[in-house]
Image 1 (cartoon, rainbow, N blue to C red):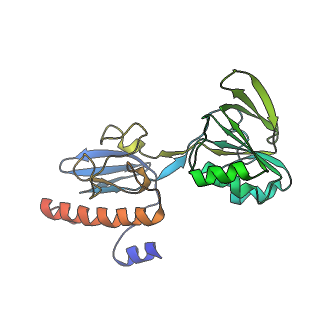
Image 2 (cartoon, one colour; image 1 turned 90 degrees about the vertical axis):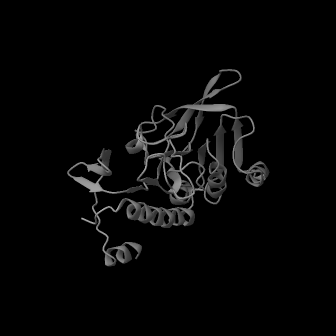
Image 3 (tube, one colour; image 1 turned 90 degrees about the horizontal axis):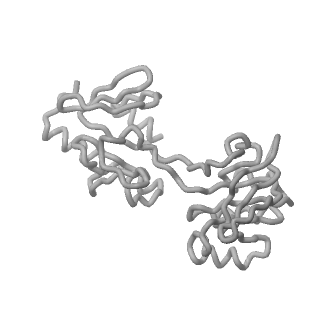
Amino acid sequence: MVQEQAANDGAAFSMETATGLEQDGDGWVVVTESDRYRAGTVIVATGTKLRELGVPGETRLYGKGVSHCASCDGPLYRGQTVGVVAEDEWAIQEALTLTEYVSEVVVFHQAEEGTGQNVHRDRLREDSRITARAGTAVEEIVGEDGVTGVRVRDLASDAESVVDLAAVFVYAGLEPNTDVLRDLVTLDDSGRVLTDAWMRTTQPGIFAVGNIRVDAPGLALTASADGATAAIAAHRYLEQRSWPTR
């Protein structure tokens, strides 16, 4: 519906992947795999992708027991034991969701205390179907045609062991899709974009919105608000620059 409204107001859509962003005089050129688009301003809303653990077996067994969605794939493992790799704040909530379907959830996290809000950690400790393995790193996801377990390392003793599992749900955080902005605007150590309240980046004419921004809440509602703010700011920027419409 939003796209239809935008199209009715004159917006054009091109379903291509942006591969680069180049300065062109007082404007910008968005480079795609098949074309180049010149613009006075660019609003970047490229979102984030799920960060991988980067361990053997993860990519090969994705969709064969490796998952990122408890509510989507949890029902496939009813009555079985599954693992959760908890490296971001959402992992504990997902582990609790899995208890609706599986017989046991083993939560692996490298920190001694674990992650997530206190209320969720308390619920995790109180649920007999959840076993927490603190101070534990997942080194490999094992299995041939599907996940059969994980090889883990105790960070205190350096001892390794294999834990039998039917599936592994990985929550290693989110990675911003900001490669197109690298070396153009200021990014923090995680690759997120520094903006002001008007979504302006450190490069005039470039705006960033949504969860690619530093300290963004990561909610659809706030991302929509970012977009509206950036659109107003971009319009004002073009008026000041007297940028031609075509």
